[in-house]
Length: 186
Image (cartoon, rainbow, N blue to C red; front, top):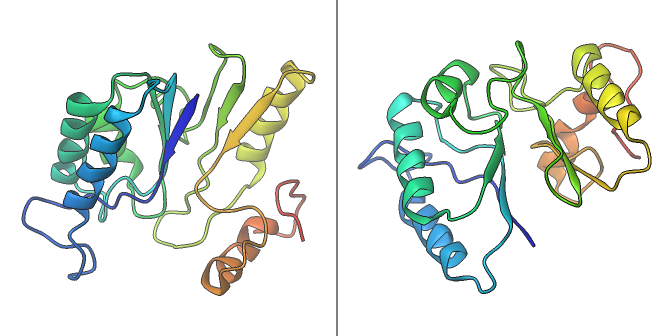
């Protein structure tokens, strides 16, 4: 069983996300729920926006939740609220986080379903992209075992999802530089 969390937006202690929402309490509630699941999930995937501002204190708060509640392997990718340098500095000890020189993306081959963890972050922007280096990684990874069951994990949805704000942003994922993109479905 695979458990998945996303958009935790963990803040520095005493701060609110967007100055409105107590996300730390909500994230802890989600982790407590995860810890109480029976059977225990085989792994946990967290698909981006671990933090609200990509600050080291926010990542340290995130690590405390992982250490306290996650009793299974944890695999994660960044979202547009995360910052790669701080992400790697504080949680680089987790599997795959430091495998790629430019992006936080990697493949997990240890389970019946292969995980392909893709980094779609464009620093400083809310939208995501799958440009040449990222598409090349995806193409090579899929080609290495074309008949293997695979789950692709990314933060930005590569299809119309029915949310106007997300559907506007995901048009950049389709074709950020006029080149080929295989992930956007219209």
